[in-house]
Image (cartoon, rainbow, N blue to C red; front, side, top):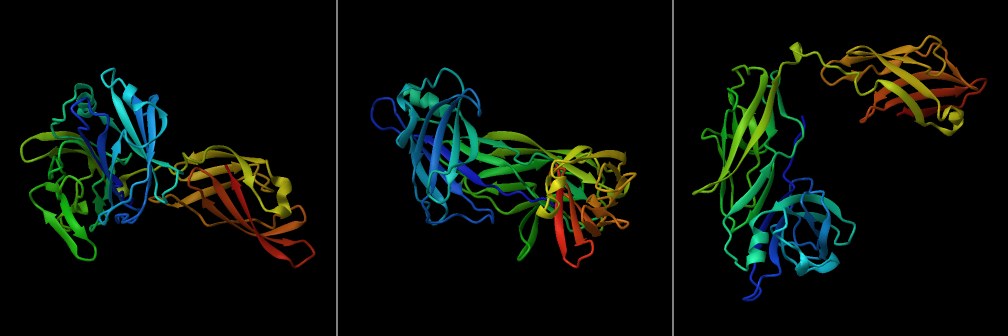
Length: 375
């Protein structure tokens, strides 16, 4: 199953530099590595870009910073007071349309930045334009995984991490409560880890403490003896403080019964595939192609593949994971001066067909392996 982790949480708030219009606002980020652990006491390279109208709009201004995270993995900086890369912060017309901030990191402290994400600036620009520092609390939240969270009814101890993008946009951070409704029967919120066990949260409420961190929370099955009902569900999540609702999002949750699903394993592989990777001994094959067609949802037909005179077929033996059969019968096949001893087939991540050949030189005894990848 796929698990997703929350990568970054941010805080925006206006700061007053003088009695005049403020020309900077503070920004705080929590940096978490791929193991869900804070990146502590480390200098981070940060690039900030102010974008016009959308998250992919024109870059109005960009700057760089070299903050150091604290013992909790947090760093703080002031947007507008960094090392200018392009544009003029003072010349931004905050009232001319929506503005977005794009954040990029280089965790090594250099300038090889990777985009972390973009968020719309809401009341902060108006505070900059009007000269006031009073900002009501506001957040931005959305789902970060592109496909629905999926439960297989045959996996009775399944847990799926609750995944969303969360940004505290403005105001002083405080605890945010996540209220869930329309959860499928026998599924609830659970907190904890595999080492200490999981606790079922019967109130359908999770908490983001201090507006920055949240528990390791998952959707989980309450009673493994009670069957789940297959179907597509839309869970409502409401983000709120103690006094007001901040954001509401829809969360897709699918419950599947593999025994009743007809999965098309072939769709990523159909078409003409060109040989792009081949070993030196048979590199005369480079640039040749094969034609791949769908026979049914579990079977591919391949023509123009090596020396198979009438083509060959590939079958997916695992209907759930769509795993290809491991070997082809090469029937004494020859490639140039070599005899094929064995062909193993694997599926690539992006629709590639990968063949691993064991070859021996005809009249010789030098055996070797060769990889052929068709894209």
